[in-house]
Image (tube, rainbow, N blue to C red):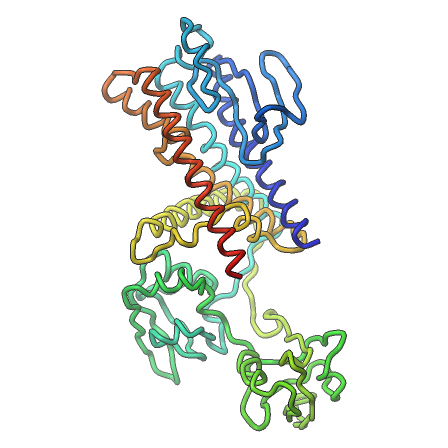
Length: 442
């Protein structure tokens, strides 16, 4: 069922993004009185699931969910309609329009995707506001993985700044380290300020090992709930018990307990807890082969004070636009990693399985809209790359025309379109091939 929910979220998100993107081309074409012959959600090789003719445009639903398209008269696109291009240009065709109008038509799709992302952020800020954990409120310090330990970070460190700049939102610290090519992290350790240098190649290791949660907040271990079959509950543990040690070894924090109990599978252990904030009790419990006692820790909002910002519509508009702007900047930084030979981020490139897996296994509207806004920005930036067959390829040739005052020949544009489609299919195969390889490896 979880897979079905992820697929449905992916299809809904892609449908919204494709319709809005193609509508951008469509409305710009209509403004300049350019005929649009087809407007399709998803591709329709051989047949369509649904189609209807309204005015001069055929609207339809294809069966291949790899995108969508509008077919604009007098334009060399993926339809490769050479017959129309061999006829004299008509006034309502794309090729007969001034260069600046053709440029606006080609940029209509990516423009609408950026606008959509901003509108989603505005809607989310008005509806849910913004909640985050201030870095200064991470009172128990951080927990780190083995890679973070390699560079000198330690469990319990309190992060003060990254490259001497304080980061208000704790969740943005890993993002700042990875995307901004940070060189140093300042932490408080045992009451002293310590500078932790970030060596060359660290980001490459993070991405290769998919260790992007290398820094997280540390929380104590207090019993929030039990599983249906819980050895801890059977042994006499109760909700709100604070676990402080296992077999005499301090395990005050959840991660410490999790690591330590793995050493005692199929054994009887002594778990020391504090009950009612005053009574210290030793509880005998049998650890099953899975190495778990069936305890859910209390959630982070029990331990930390989160900042909550509420927005009026007037406050949300500039804030939403700012979030979209920051999203574009961050995604451009992510693209830069693809071309860094040290990072080898291309090995982590994924296709539809990877994209589908970023959606939660249960339907959660706030997460859905957050991911749709991100994907809208991603679609806009990828579409504007100067690759023939993408919007950016057409923009590149239009800029050449503006600068040189010479229009590339139709034959050249045909060859460029074919080349671009080959490149795109190769990238599609590579990305989805990575997904398949990872499935077998896992």
